[in-house]
Image 1 (tube, rainbow, N blue to C red):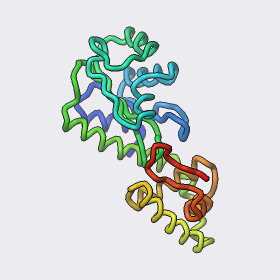
Image 2: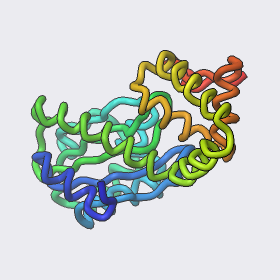
Image 3: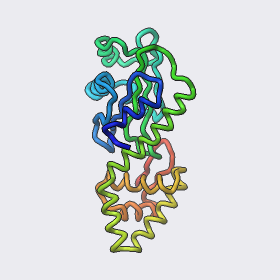
Length: 221
């Protein structure tokens, strides 16, 4: 998945006018990763600057946010963002999907439409599936340095690697993820904390760190 054409690929798969992918929140820096057009990029920029909008809500609530009639009958009120939209004629509907992996919130995928209306059910399901794929791509990209460190660790410390496997099994059960995603989640937490993956694994195995899918998300003791 190439960041340069990421939004274009998503746009080709969905019946919308434009797409953006943005990282936001505490784990990754706030920025637009990819946008299919200037309007999509500007919608992200407005939300970054104003601190409100569908992307922020999707990340905070960990679920899609749909505004099918943005100008006529909005379901939500974003005072500053709604005023700013008055300068962007043609944006009639917005749909924001959170980018999540287990308890980690990475950002949002936003779709804009030049006509009001809900997304068809099949398109909503398709967008959610694509958002899952984008989440994995963004986290893998972010933890590439951690992955390199892990590869070095495998060569010099097989015991450490066994503990990572054991911790992956525990995270798999805690967060209801596949083995691949559970290991990626460990890598993501190591990236966020700036520590070796073996240190995160030890914390999981010793019960000091849990990735259970709970309202509080990751729990550290």
